[in-house]
Image (cartoon, rainbow, N blue to C red; front, side):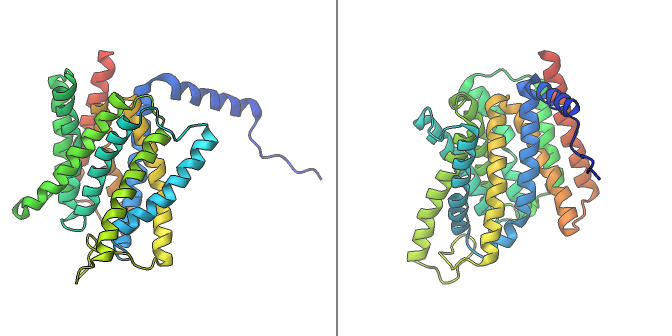
Length: 321
């Protein structure tokens, strides 16, 4: 008896692919928003396991191992997609990579010093810096509506993360510095690297993070501290758990970094930055699904403010164009 085929009908599949292509090519702003949302969902998921990584090795060893896995993955992706890993402008790409990498390394480092709430609140000040640098460096014209929408989004971030104001100190400036560097790096993407491929932009970030981490790891390995921590630990023999977590993190980070780089390359930086707030919404969802951590009323209100501000900004932009 012949086996009945379960394959999708050819014309139906072709029609679905055609509609998806039309949607995807409809507007760079739409593609940028979708890519930023995808990146936020992936990063918020894999960041839930940073604490597990800290139990196995220092941040510097983790970043070196992750770069060693991520870069070959990007080479493979580049060959399969026909994208070259050679930047069109090495200096501009290197500058952008250095700025973004510095911000991300500071953020990861502060996770071992400060509560996650303070570190996260500092990093997600990036949209404020994107707005400021757009005006100061590139003479962009930002409307009062856009300013209020971004400020409201940041207020929602604070409501969601709820940093302890009584414990604020000079160390609290470190995650703020991460926000400055990350915001500046994202702003530089369309201005300096608009012609670069997502593979090149992602590879640049992983390469710079890997080189910086290798230098710090070498120092702490040659001059170990008495009580090594997540920030001051040297090289240790990698366990199977660490290798698995690193591969898992590298694969997710490669996809997410490529998505967010492309989003900033084709979109408007200040608008993509607001979409990135969804990281916190996804983080709350993943935390509940993975660890059973519930979100309180103030945090739920913060999520609502973030959604409203992002939606208002998108609608306002669509009416202006």
